[in-house]
Amino acid sequence: MTALNELRCEACHSGAPTVTEAERNALMAELSDWTVIEREGIAQLERCFAFKNFKLAWALTDKVAALAEAEGHHPEITLEWGKVTVRWWSHSAKGLHKNDFICAAKTDALLAE
Image (cartoon, rainbow, N blue to C red; front, side, top):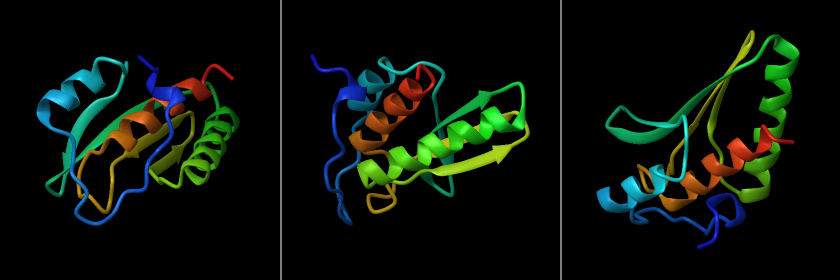
């Protein structure tokens, strides 16, 4: 099986199917430290990353932004002193799509760079 961070996002359109509960559970098993939250009735993947200063947090923010552009899939990124919160969800599908799990795994891989 191919690791999530090695996959590419697929084009997602309005009304695209969200993952089923079984798919979500299987995909979550491949991620660590991510949680599923619900905001305004929409399921999202969220992870908070802690850093020892603002500059290191900013560096991750830049890497996630570059990842988003490369994948054509864009998260919510909140940058604070020593902390970055990333939320992935598919705006057009109004929930979680496999793309979100792929990008979460790729976000994790950015830490190893």
